[in-house]
Image (cartoon, rainbow, N blue to C red; front, side, top):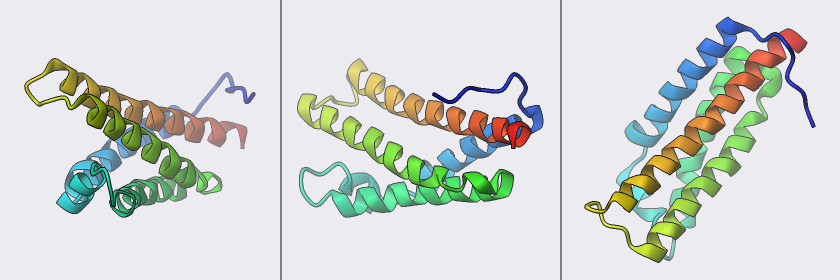
Length: 135
C-alpha cells in the first residue's frame, strides 16, 4: 500500500484542488450536453453518452496532470473509470427506486454522487502534491 510522505507541497495541493473543482464544474455543468445527461441515464443506448461524458472529465484530469505533474498523466484513465462507475451507479439506483425531485432521497443521491466525485478529486490532488516532494 502506498504511503503518503510527511510533507506535501501546499502550493500544489491548493492549485490541484482548485483546478479539480473548476474541472468538475466545467465538465458536469458547462460541457455536459443534454444528450449526455439524458442519454447516460436511459435503460438502453446509454454507453455512448456515458463514455462521452466521462471522456470530458478524463480530458480535464489529463490537462491538470500535464500542468502540475506530467508523470501522473495516467490519473486521467483512473478518472475515466471511477467517474463512469460513480455515474452508472447513481443511474442504476435512480432507475431502481425512481426518486422524484420532490423527494429528499433524490437530493441525497445527487449529493452522494457529487461528494464521491469531489473525494476522488481530493485524492488526485493529494497524489499530485505528494509526488512533487517525493519525485
